[in-house]
Image 1 (cartoon, rainbow, N blue to C red):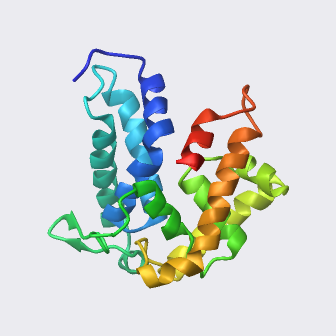
Image 2 (image 1 turned 90 degrees about the horizontal axis):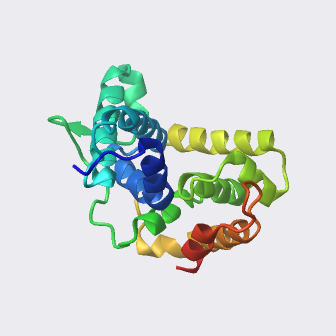
Length: 216
């Protein structure tokens, strides 16, 4: 453990750089996007309390571990019918990740391909990916699409609901399926760069982190 620091600043810095990779790991462990997001949110809230004494040497790993535990807790509290609607399986208290030996090494790119499922409309795929992978707000995404915040929020909620209702697995598709998702992936990369160059919110109109990620 390192010396105590301003917890909120440290946590914000970790999420700014590694949120997508952390979330991708949690999704691979629990197999459901909404559950993973909820679990990560709970882990972040717990971090604001637990890190007051000292910041973990590996805060990213700490968040993954705690989020996994919170995901298990949420799963066990669900009704039997609710459990059947999720895409993960629990065996002896451990999580079985689908397609654990995915051929894509980059966690963020893996999550982009996952969100770009052809069952969703192209707009829904791009909007969902910008929120889930890049952590952009509905307001920021709405500005890029030239629609209202409410419209964009509803679009993202519907996309998540469709994923759960259709039991779309969060895993890397077979390489033969990549071409049909490539247009969505390229659209996301383009909008990441555009949003970074003309940030719709914040004091600085240019977000270097988004520009660098799009180029990478």
